[in-house]
Length: 412
Image 1 (cartoon, rainbow, N blue to C red):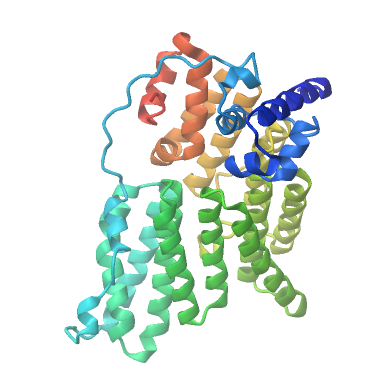
Image 2 (spheres, rainbow, N blue to C red; image 1 turned 90 degrees about the horizontal axis):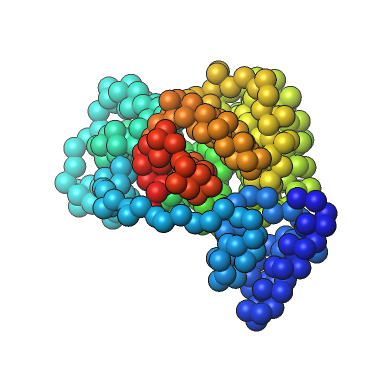
């Protein structure tokens, strides 16, 4: 989008907004953006290249997409959506419903057996494996018995086991929060993240608390409560930086600090705040260099590689597709989980779609699906880009694209 195109587009947005009797603040709030971002759009400073952002603006103004961008792809006739299926995490939601061990409160309990600790550790590790790989149906089936055992354990075990049981519960609730965010169930994710923070504090592990805050910030981003996400992440970063400056930080400290910088980059990118987003990426790069390796403390997968993966995602969120593709070129993610590898391919696919390189975009999405099928089938960003590819292709959509759209339920 050239400077003149940005100016014309911005003037069109401003005219439509005024016709609707809306202030910049009102429209910005309606679409989950900041007033400063909208002001930059209307002044022709901020380009709007992404189809999903165009659609967001059109919906906020209550106008057809073509009223904003005459050359936008027409909406093709939608295929009726299939009947709603049971969500993979329905059983997991029940785990968060009510008190986890009411009979224990009434004294109807069995004493905890310390010899079950190794099995509990293995089960918690397995929950995170299922979360990273997007196997939510199996996670949902496994989580109920595990949480029940842990919640009973923290109330009935001998003192020497209680601290670790709280740690295991915090880790389990963090996995649940991450899974619920991925399936766009922010209400359940909020409950799980809050419980993770409490259990980490009860265990005496402050870094576990900060890891829980990171999960909570993802909830706020999904809810488009960007001010809450920024506040939670920024206060956590401030406290951690103060600690790191006065002490010799452990790798775990650096992993959590770097991850929170990446969270702030995400928040600023979603708000369209380019300079702030890039500053946070650079801050994360600095922490990553200090850490010197890719790690998986608190299942955050922080390290130099993950910083660059997030830099790709940030560039895509800002509409800088060329920069995203340059950053992704030669980036090796095979040492990370299949989830992170698939996420990189998804963002590269989004970048190709922004550049109208639709065949390349589809190729990336299909490769991501091979690595993490359930993630691609349920991820909001994945479904959005597949839907855009179908809209652009219209009746000329290939069988391969239509089959992917059906698997991701993106036709409706």
